[in-house]
Length: 176
Image (tube, helix red, strand yellow):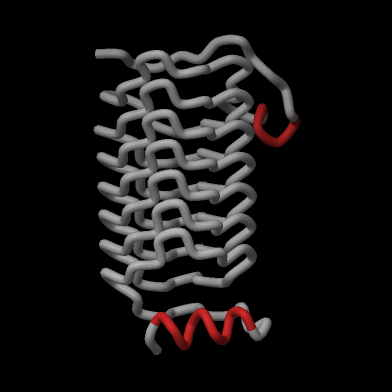
């Protein structure tokens, strides 16, 4: 399937594109809200400034994808591979990133308010000036993560806090 066919089918109301192979595709600026791209290969894809709000990307491969300024609010990104992805200025408000792999990803200035980051691999990631307010980071290793200027206000972390909605004004991690 090529890009024109995908966009045509999407505009006709079709949403299930699970398992599709679209590596290195250019969908910059595309409006694909609510699309199902679960288990799709989108490695090295240009999805910058796209609307992928409420999309299902469960288990998708987005290795080294360009997601700068992309709207991923309310999307399901559980177990997604985002190694080396560029998510600068992306909106991930309320996004489920549980068990995602974000090693070496760039999330500078990203909006992660209320996002689920439970058991996410973040080693080597950049979260400079990212908004992590009310994000759930239970079981997430942030050793070696650049959090300079990040908003950690009301960060939810550890044990049952993410399920109960209990908020803490602190977080602990091994900063060595």
